[in-house]
Image 1 (cartoon, rainbow, N blue to C red):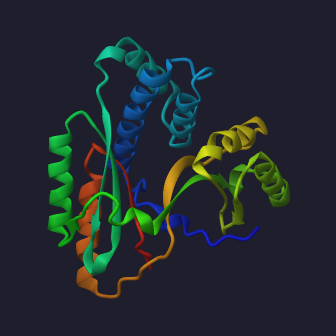
Image 2 (image 1 turned 120 degrees about the vertical axis):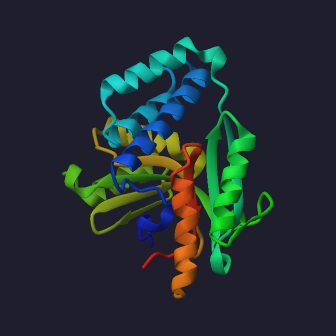
Amino acid sequence: MSGHSKFANIKHKKEKNDAAKGKIFTIIGREIAVAVKEGGPDPNNNFKLATVIQKAKANNMPNDTIERGIKKAAGEVGNVNYEYATYEGYGPNGIAIIVDTLTDNKNRTAANVRNAFTKGHGNIGTQGCVSFMFDKKGQIIIGKEDCDMEPDDIMMLALDAGAEDFSEEEDCYEILTAPDDFDAVLKAIQEAKIAVTEAEVTMIPQNYVSLTDEAAVANLQKTLDMLDEDDDVQAVYTNWEEE
């Protein structure tokens, strides 16, 4: 099956330096806490937790850090009060932006997100104002350097498990699923002992928008950088086609 993946543009969440690595660990730590609260501390009986652990390992989080996070969350189940919140809005030239957050203080998070949009000369919109421009999909990324299996074999395995699409990129394979089929497809990939670089339910733009004005690019980058630096922000999705 053919695809037109723009993996590098799907979400603005990259490991640029040690600070970014620390941010990734903070994000995953909160996801572990929520997963344990919802389904318990045993990943064998809690697929959501197992998926977060897979994500943690893909991001080189030490095993002892993962285990410590699970034990801490299990001991504080009654005190875990993180809530998910999503914000939508527009950057320069109408670039669509979706911000997923996980926070223990929605007022603080809302103010910070709004400030990030304002600083970049964008604006927060109403719920649903840009999400219709994206498709919610399960996405599984397999790095070629970590996989010896033939592409056709991976594709057939994924499709048999319920995947919608498979595409081969320069340095990876991308598998897309419906959100409801994500767990089953990921489980099939993992049971085949295929190393997964990244796996999550994400928002994929239906169309991408280029920016040619340098001031607009700088303003958008300012918003995205401020969001990246906010510990409450889990992921940011845009339809910006980075050059």
